Image (cartoon, rainbow, N blue to C red):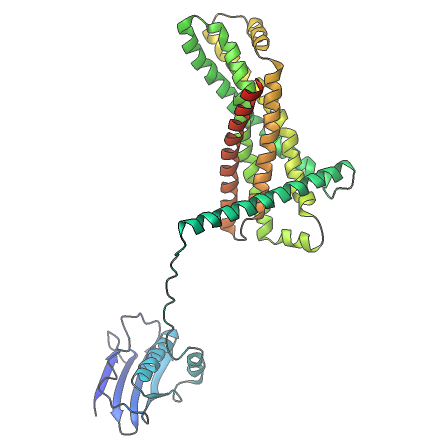
Length: 387
């Protein structure tokens, strides 16, 4: 009678071991020892272990487990390997000698391992990909348009006193979007104005035109610099916070709860955020413009021979009111875009903790890129109307 044996190293009385004996009544698998926490290279059932036994439709593989000690999931994995090998050798598998708990666990496993799923290859052509991207862009544009319309309807209802927006939420968002951002807006605009004056003085001094640095700082700050820098600050600070807050509510199923109870999301959550940023952004632009001009004033007073009163008179004489109006209008559009983009990104975010960070990052990137793109559009329009 041929016998095949196996045991874990090092061998001891409690080490697991197995042996196969070809007997007249069938193939006997004898199990001994404790089968606990075995790694795959210590005890495995070889694929050729049943190659030397007699196979046949009437023969079976049965188990002797009289000397079997304690066992864990590694034992079930071994028995499952034996069951699959018996099926390949045309032997019926008899597990009646196993402990009842092991039989129940083994019954949960299939007779054979499932083959790996075939790799799905993307065979879409370039036209199909372009069409899919175009369709997605059109759907997203339609969703954003519907969102804008819903927010606008909520704003009209707010003017009529019928809005679902809470005044407390609006005041909190106004504070977060306005006074809380004064420090960083002041620092950035002051430094940008100072740098602009410093570079301008170095270049204008070559042509004995230092006096025109006042016009340079004033026009640049009122027309472009303050609006863009304030918008970038708000996109990174407030837009990211909006997206993170809404995506967190999405993950906590608070958005679903509001929709189930019939509370409109646009009026209850989005409108206070958008309205607060639209209100505070133009005011922050005006404040940032004055701070930027003051930064240029500080540098100019240390580098050129000009009285403070003369500097301010020259500045306001050289900067027309239309430049401030133009920057004010740009700040309104920047605020609306940043708030809508952040809210939309938060609403379409996933429900996991990682999606919160992804939504915040995406909102900041979209806000900054969108602000720069909008500024380019405004530059073209200003050139067309002669501003």
